[in-house]
Image (cartoon, rainbow, N blue to C red; front, side, top):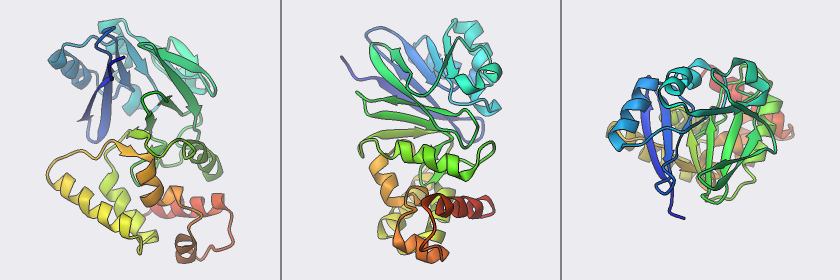
Length: 256
């Protein structure tokens, strides 16, 4: 089986659009649909026909293209069962433990509440690909709108058990801002310092920072490093629970 072709590009102001294409079957998948016009233009440029949209959560900047793309391509729209009533054009609702298929490849569904109540992520184990949208970012995590910090911590704890070489595609280009916050709570981390410098150079050159890898996130993302003694000491939370350390960092990030 030939590898999937992956196209990543920015639309709206900072949303990532991601297309996966299987050359053997001709199937093409969009992870979320932030902007129908931008996605259509990329599909036409590449000569691909959209067959599927895998929706992660109900926020407008992730679903606004659902109905126009469905009208144009008659594509299947999959989305979270906990948000089934508010996902435009939904054909199939899925949740924790469900397994989808895309071009002969199994796709596992993880429920990751936190950013929204029903947010889900999609994992292509054979390809070592994980699509996290607004749950896990490069050096960051999603703002908590509909669920408490403890729920988001449990969601991230689920994802961090995947192999370190898992490639992670996230929903927004927030990486430099996330890195600056990470340095504020983990200032003596040499790997983090080097990464933020590299990210600054990428952004200065107009380059994207997606994808990342889980291994790199475990070294540089403070929201996955709540057990680190240096971070706990910096926050004066040496004896706190992991969930409480996570919640304090998320609170500080909200006003950073």
